[in-house]
Structure formats: structure tokens, C-alpha cells
Image 1 (cartoon, rainbow, N blue to C red):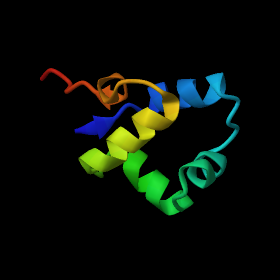
Image 2 (image 1 turned 90 degrees about the vertical axis):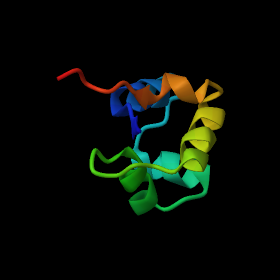
Image 3 (image 1 turned 135 degrees about the vertical axis):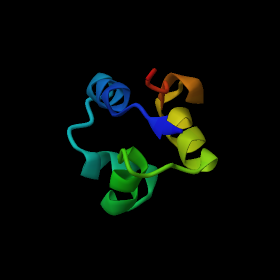
Image 4 (image 1 turned 135 degrees about the horizontal axis):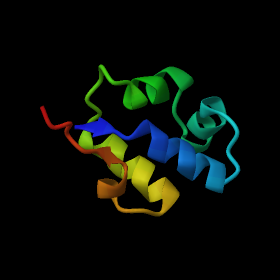
Length: 70
């Protein structure tokens, strides 16, 4: 499971959040934790996905990246 970074950036823009640092502070996590959650190399745990979705008041399914078809 991966987070759709583009969707997160879109949601950040809607809430007028200017940076990942600002978002991390609002979520009560470090910038490094947020970077890991959004990283292509990292599989976030379910609670991270749920927390991020709840913050943006959306379904977790809306920020999960669909698997790319091979």
C-alpha cells in the first residue's frame, strides 16, 4: 500500500498548508516521519493512513495509490 503523494499535495493546497513541515506539525509528527509515510519506498502502517485521511476529512481509500498495472 502506498500513499498518493499528488492527492496529499492537492489536499494540502485546498487547506492552504504550504509545506510538509507545516503538515507534519499539524499531525503532531516529525517531518521525517511524514516523508517516510509519503515515500515510494515505504509502506505506511494502516494507522498512519487513517490518521492522514481523518485529518483531511476523507476516506483512507481516497489517498491510497492504486497499484500500477504491469
